[in-house]
Image (cartoon, rainbow, N blue to C red):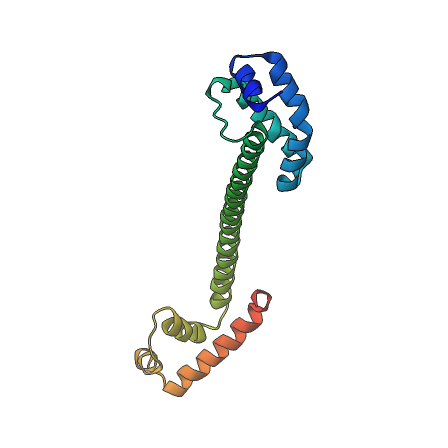
Length: 178
């Protein structure tokens, strides 16, 4: 049967022409689609949808060269669309996974920060009174050593000694966080 005859019969709704076209081209089109998609299940799905569309839009068929070319071009375009859609889906999955991981990492970091802050507060509270006062003026109020010495009426060397002692004691108490 010629291409023109087959197309004319398809356009008129001839089920036998449709069945004959399906039986003749289904397997080769599936093989072709599988070569692009690397999955026979997906290939069969693409070809079946193409044949459904062919029947649904049979009155609009515009075959320029041959029915074979028309069918292969339809399957080719459907495969390209599926591959493009899959890339977009993978990009969305990756983006979702990244956002989920970032949120999880952020929560973990916040928890670790909170634990460290609590441990630091506890360790600072355990420092000897004068040592704690010097440390808090230095680190929490950001005063310089001379300013601390003047405020507490002690020498600058004493301030340095208290800071060294505080840092040594805090490092020992906060080892698990390093």
